[in-house]
Image (cartoon, rainbow, N blue to C red; front, side, top):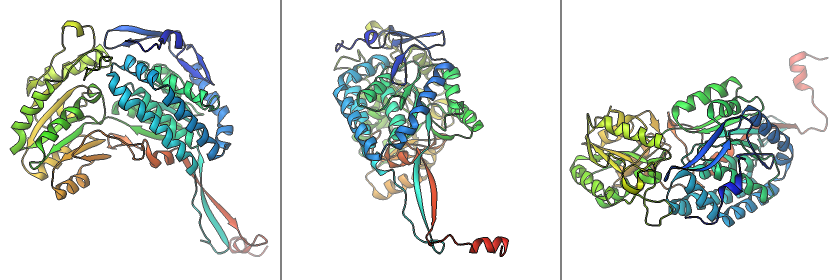
Length: 504
């Protein structure tokens, strides 16, 4: 299926967007964007090298005085126009996102693109709230107040699972606060990030405010994070890579925002609505083919409901339709690549030695054989300390374990290094309040799993990182606080001088 959007015509070999221009990379190395549903090459382009990163940072630095010096109202107006352009181009964005990621078009159309437009509208409003705090005479005749200011050039690194959404989460709060940015998307999925930057230019956001460099993490990514003119790094990705990012950023004392891995628990108490929990578990574990750091990956089910839950989840998973992402009947697309599919399959194969694979656990054949597809998989009866329970699989795999007491269920939910998201399923208000209070995660849903809102923060505890995306909390992270103090007397007083130096 094609909506008339031609990738080659739109990008050629240019996968860098620097100073308002689409440019080829200069690394001398090429990369293929592959449609994971078919294995066909969508676009071949030259990767960014360190020179491209330097050029993008220079463009962002040059644009910073003008953009940060604009009034909040002026930035807000430009970002409202940006939101409108994104909405006008929604079909192209949805098509390109599904083409490069393999996700069902209905997911791109109903979730990714509307969410991005909503984020843009939210931060357009937030731009008018870059405010300090009025204060009073805390020290005699002096008046103090606090200013919030933009911080400078931000260098961000985004993952491949939600390229458009992640571009929005990185770029929008930064530029709303008056910063300029260089974003490095994953080399697998740069198309919608480039389109996002182009849409900003069409909306009148000045050249150099938003720049995109598409290169490998080892060179372009590390060079961006370590660049001396980049004052803040925002990274979304695995915890292992996040540690490396932190190490590089620390060397130049950058501000750091990390949204890392997740292993979200899905806790079902014995008074829960079983049907609702079953549907929630299947949807929550299979969203984006399980390639979601907030996806439900560990279901803990209280013993009276355990057997029925396992049976019903397996039965529902078996009805999930794998297929062409552009077919409206498709529920589940492929994984991002054959390499990722093989990684997920290896987790499942190793689990057969210590747990029960209830359903799934294989790649489909037939007309889907060329794609990176893997069937929805349910694993039961694994030990809490086993690999499939403790490690992030990032695929359509749900592991189910029983528990007996409420204390045990909450303890098991907290028993991994991660703490990004979780959900609790119960009809009891006390249990719900206890779960939301005691589960160590940045977001805890009750009787639901996955929904996010532009107005609410997203970010983790523990090894899932620190800092928030979306919401006013995210906006404030891209600002710095300055204390300003005035002497209110007509003539500058010298009392404090005398106190320190005597009468001179």
